[in-house]
Length: 398
Ligand code: FEO
Image (cartoon, rainbow, N blue to C red):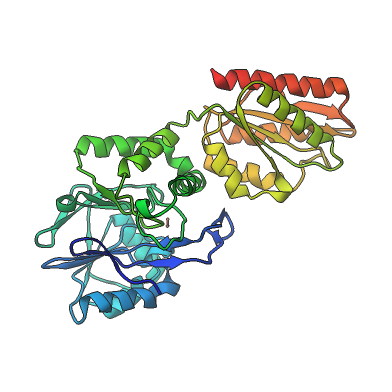
């Protein structure tokens, strides 16, 4: 079991490291590197616990609190977000500290009552509300739909410390608790995967929230999210990355995601790949039956073009292709990304139209009519795919 870690004088990480979780949100999000559930204890004249941990880790949280507090009690239990990976230990905290005042947004209160049922003394807060603990104070900033209606950030001005719950987090289990203690490339990779798979639909709200925080003039020297590491060395790095991801412009990079029955659609995918490479852009190619969907979505985040391929089968697309398109419809990568459908067919065809409809529903802008080839691509069909790859490369380099 992990031990408490001081992140500032009198402020402790009291979370848990979940080394072995490999799927999050049911099976929607692959977590190859595990995760953490971060909770923070502020010990002042009054004591506040900001967020809890996932329910199966409640005993770890209790042990850390007893270690740090002995017989002292928590005065405030701040619930930034009621999703159960953070509020799961709420009932255990209520049992241990029945006198603690619960602090959350109005939607947070509704969420707690829906999940845990009980009546309790609760202070509902709005943006700008403050609780003084002693030398330090807590200021609350509502962050609705980042990523639930109840979400809020807690800010400690005397420490220039922002506790934004899911925002700026990563699913990354590690022995180090801080950004200067882990590989920076891995860290940004996991932060991008987290943003793409959870926050991408809320990009416009993120842009607005970053602007709002800028206008509030908050001094932020440390960002301590509720998953992964704490940004203490360079919090600006993740704020800049969020601004870039939320803008959605991406870089000169293309994604090809396809599946194939008898290699015809594969040949088209590789001809597109060659054309894009010849056009001088970065490309990543994924065969969907052997690729991780959450990893592909992470790559889509910074790509400017997305090509999806499937042969027609039973007037439809291959069942291995549907889940990516279904998820993209929910995640809405946005109309700054260009899309193309391609694939082979035997007699009736139709897969390209289905892919195009799904890409349009995901708000992706179609580059041109899909590439469809009957039975087996000829040399001239493959040359056409190659040229389309080159044309797309030219478009996304501009
Ligand atoms: Fe990490 Fe929205 O919970």
